[in-house]
Structures are given as C-alpha cells and as structure tokens.
Length: 205
Image 1 (cartoon, rainbow, N blue to C red):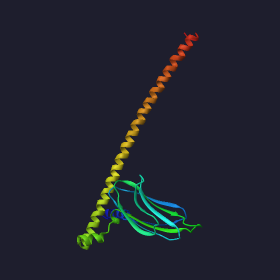
Image 2 (image 1 turned 90 degrees about the vertical axis):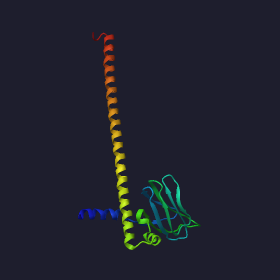
Image 3 (image 1 turned 180 degrees about the vertical axis):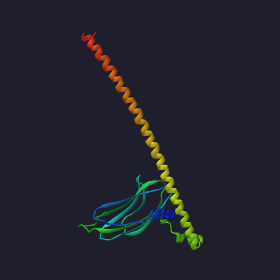
Image 4 (image 1 turned 120 degrees about the vertical axis):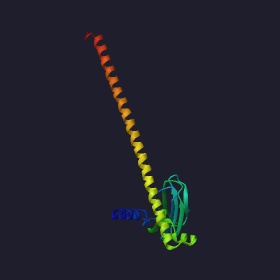
C-alpha cells in the first residue's frame, strides 16, 4: 500500500511540474523553448521581458509553422491555446535592435503550464458553485484521467515501436535470404564459366 502511495506521489509531482524558466536574451538574438504536448490539452503561458530599449517579439508555433500566438513589442502578458493534435510546440523570443548601439542582455521569464496544472480551479469552483472538497475531487479526477491518458499513449507508442521492430526484422530477414540466393547464383555461374573456359583452353577434359 505504501509503495502504491509513493508511486502515485511521484507521478503527481511529474505531471504537476511547472516549467518556469529565466534566461538572458542578447541583442538581435532569437531563443526558443520546445515542448512536446498531447492532443486536446490546454496550454497557458505567462511571460515577462526586461526592458532595455530594444524591441522583443514573441511567437508560439507548432511543428508545421502555424502561429498559435504572436505579440510584437512584448513586455508582459499571458497566452493560452488548446492543442488540436499531438505535436511539438515552440515558444520563441526574438530581440530586434532599435536605433544605434548595442543594448545589454535582458532577462526573460516564462512560466509554461499544460494539462491540469493550466486549469484554474478557483474559477471553476465559482462558476459551478463547488465546495472545496468537490473542487479537490474534480482536480483528482482530472489528474487520474491525465495519468490514464499518458499510460494509454505510452502503450500505443510501445505497440507502434513493436510493429516497427517486427517489420524491420522481417525485411532484414528477407533481404538476407535474397542476398544469399544472389551469392549462390553468382558462385554457381562463376564455376560453370570457369569450367567452360578451361575446357575451351583444353586445360581440363
């Protein structure tokens, strides 16, 4: 029972992990954060960019280049979107010089959340008039559903990898058999050719 409880706590801590980072953005530089997110998942982000007299643009794109959020001269704000399919999503900050001179590096803060960590349960409680215990039960229900979805996705990926391995194995086996048949045919042809050659030269009977 204790082991199950600890496993549940570890999974919960992994899922509730908030990806808040700070980094430095130099003048005329572009930096991106890439995240792999499942289908039909709410994604929210909060950002704050230190001002240094230069312009900073923010863009959120998927792997096909579709712009999900864009902000020119971004300083501070939030964004949110729901993923339509499993994909890699990229949050990019780009510093563009304005006027002469080179500005100093600026600090960028980004807090990216997705899944149940992106949901605001206080607003849900107010909208549906839920009690604190009901809110906690709703959160645990969403958490368990998220865990089940993650396990289902990992199982499907494992099945795909197994099918790929089996397909690769069968192709390699057939290619090996074909190579062996080709080598046997070539060796037989060489023996017959040399035998005719030696007979023509009267080296053998």
